[in-house]
Amino acid sequence: MSAFDLIVKGGTLPDGTRADIGISGDRIAAVEILPEGMEAREIIDATGDLVSPPFVDPHFHMDATLSYGLPRINASGTLLEGIALWGELKQIVTVDEMVARGLAYCDWAASMGLLAIRSHVDTCDDRLLGVQAMLELRDRVGGYIDLQLVAFPQDGLYRDPTARANTIRALDMGVDVVGGIPHFERTMQDGADSLADLCRIAADRGLMVDIHCDETDDPLSRHIETLAYEAQRFGLQGRVAGSHLTSMHSMDNYYVSKLLPLIAEAGVSAIPNPLINIMLQGRHDSFPKRRGLTRVREMQAHGIRVGWGQDCVLDPWYSLGTGDMLDVAFMGLHVAQMSSPAEMARCFEMVTATNAAIMGLDDLGIAVGRRASLVVLDAGSAIEALRLRPARLAVISKGKVIARSPRGDATLNLPGRPDQFRRRAPKA
Ligand code: FE2
Image 1 (tube, protein in one colour):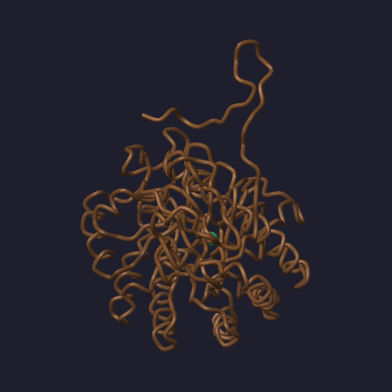
Image 2 (tube, helix red, strand yellow):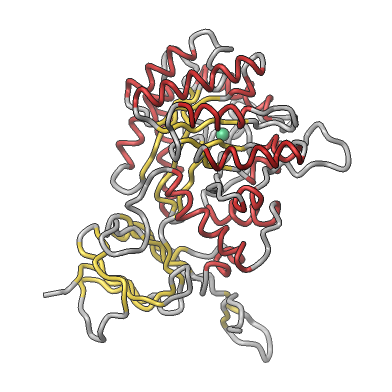
């Protein structure tokens, strides 16, 4: 009889240690060097390869994904034209189309080892078609991807006349997390009031909160201060995230020196989205042009949990994207200048363990008893994975191998050079 259903043998974990991973059913049953000859129904030889917990995306818009060009392209490239364009699209899109596009995207995600996604879903639609579609999608992919939904009043909780009622309806229908967009309300005061309202709703229902917060270049957009205050007032420490926080890039340094300890004290996490932030922000600048990313290293130095989110793939706001969280971390690493070995390793951790913690997914991770969801990558280390963004040789979800990809080896036809090579760095 086999000791395990599946063994992933000889891989290197993100912390650099080597271990075999024994899997029984949907659980990790061993993380150690197993005796030679240990049997299993299936053995994956991961010798020399990186074995990682699954990738996790804590900020996405699944209801809009893969809709690029419908009904037209975002000509200015700004956040505001993207919102207007999405407003046009949602008048004509159907539930079936949103489900089909979401399923297609989840195929991409599964192939990349992206096995947990927090998606905002627009609640500014009296028919709540997006909510219906995303609830159906959550059921359809639930066997292999954790899809966590955020009730997101895209056009403003108060600015849109029925948004608040529709957001409550969406939560009643089973949407998981409370969302908001204070910088899009009519006034700073309305934005602040919306945060108090949303945090109260979350506290009453025992839910998490994830706010599109200060996604602007305006140094005076300071809703993150209010979010931290309300999180603390309603006892939501550890359950609230501020997404984007791009205004923090432009804030006065003295003010930030007071703000960061307040965010840390309130246990509010931060989710910058580097691909989108670098693309959308700074559009009103001439030169020098701001980077459009929040203060990542500075928040981490204050003990604030910071993950990297993807936000968009082929939609009204972003014309590219692959579903690969390594692309996201790669961009974040560059824009935030996180170039030391420790910081690069942290960037990898941000798109795996840290993002899982932000989403409250404490069953993920490589440890005995945890869910058997793993990714085998064609790289020798976490940092090399960031450099190469390599093939996912095997993706395992809940003990089942759900995707495989061939190695990225190249063949050469050059005199005196090897026929085949791998883009791995020489061992130091
Ligand atoms: Fe977003």
